[in-house]
Image (cartoon, rainbow, N blue to C red):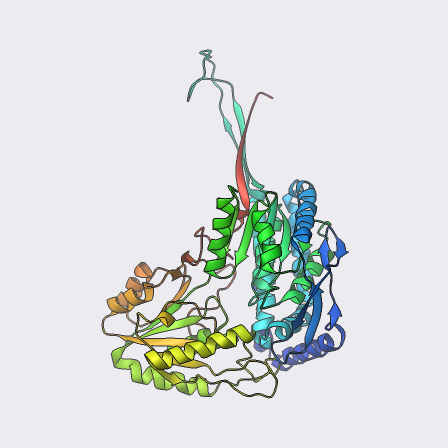
Length: 540
């Protein structure tokens, strides 16, 4: 097995002087998808068979409202069918040698590579990402498959053997540490059985593939529910199913069920045959699932990532140009619709004017419009609810503080919800400083002493990502030891709070942003999908 290497497609094309080829491949893929993939009727897939529901869900592109496809409005009964199919397949899959499971995951990674630009184009059309964001997301899915395969191989399937030596004396009684015969001990991490995987709209390829891979490679079967309620990204989920199927995953091990959270999602949480839930989404939804399961007396495993309200601190010792680039990228990339988006910035008073002027200048250069076009950086909001939240947040900022830049809806002629990247200045106790918004609004506040900035940065219920810009070593040390977040960056020009790289950074939430304290893309992620068993055998 080759050593893990990050995919980094765009970086590779750029380094080789082939950016034009990168753009050509994406444009050709987008045309292909428009002409041959969209506007069809898509089934659910349960136990390897196509299943159709009595009702359908229509999915439209946030870019222009055009039809993506018609999908099935799955019910609780469909979810139960999928759970039963997964349970029936779980024993054989869980008993398959880990090396064979790794082969399937690596085959899936290779299929993603071959279909990369087509899947990226589907993603851009489906949820409004730019080409660079979409190709990077498919890259991350490949990285998850490859990295977890390497981790599984390096740990030899998480099986460890040892021997307790025997003794020549036998006292005829048992107690802790009593003399006895030799024991051969096998400590093995084993799968739970069935995992429900509930995915978000904003990273429907990478996060979905990462969660599913975590469950599958460790021997669990999966019932996968893509986002299908308000923000619908069901076609990318269908593509994930096809990749795993074509990679050789047995029927029933991976089941694709579309439908509202109130039906499919709740059934996965409440069904006693489902051993665990992997979920990425809001804190309210995540904690609600835990509460519901425990109220029913169910002992489920929960692997959750639950959003953030991510701060960046800009010290007077910062390189302002680097801070502006990193914060603008993290606050406004994908229209701010990332759990890791930078949504709060604390700037030292002495450099506030310089920083704000530079950030506004940066935003004026960001092109808003059709994300399928190469020159566009900010595409549409995912839908009407996001637009409503944007407008309400801007009005709140006007009442309680001021809008330093932006705050307007942009007319592009496309029909989607396009808005300006927005900077607001508000007090620390305002709700906009504490609530996750998921829109392109960054709140700016000032500080005098570094300790004040750190205190403000930690003053929220979330703890996902955080960033610092400072050339002062004392401040860097204080930030590293005092910030209450799981994924932390210092002086990062490419992203103040976003852009974790599989195998290099672990993406993990503290406080209200997570549950287990273990993150994706790390050496500890897979263990969350396994339970330990110690087997001692005496004699031959």
